[in-house]
Image 1 (cartoon, rainbow, N blue to C red):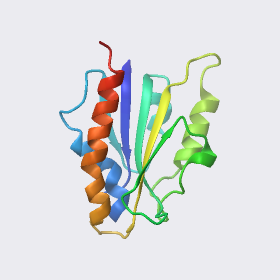
Image 2: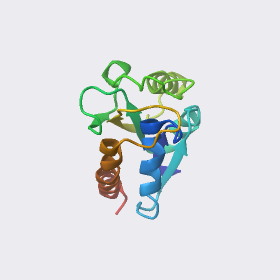
Image 3: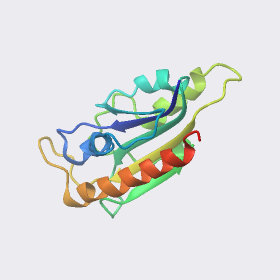
Image 4: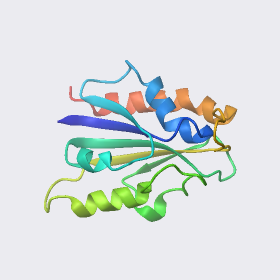
Length: 157
């Protein structure tokens, strides 16, 4: 069983939508034992399998610009209404809110649900072929450090 699964969600070919996989790349060789990090390029259905196989799931994704590109929102065990709006050109076939709701609905009765943490980074540009915008690129390392600290704090001693 994976203690913590970190999923960086997004399409690196769509500007700031690629921030999730960029954070995963920044985490390489920095995570505690029992922690696994994967990029997810649009399809969130692999999270359904992870739901029963991880104690904690950390999701990293871009969200719509709410006035401060690069700002990081941290939500703990969010419900759909608490999630920031998805990026305007989201690459997800099924959105994060729908995927989390589906995972909760499909869970075995009485089974412990994993702890879920969502990091949503406000994006500015989601154009095809665009690089990460400077404020979003600047958020990668601080967020990677935060995730490393979080996972180290919850690692078995």
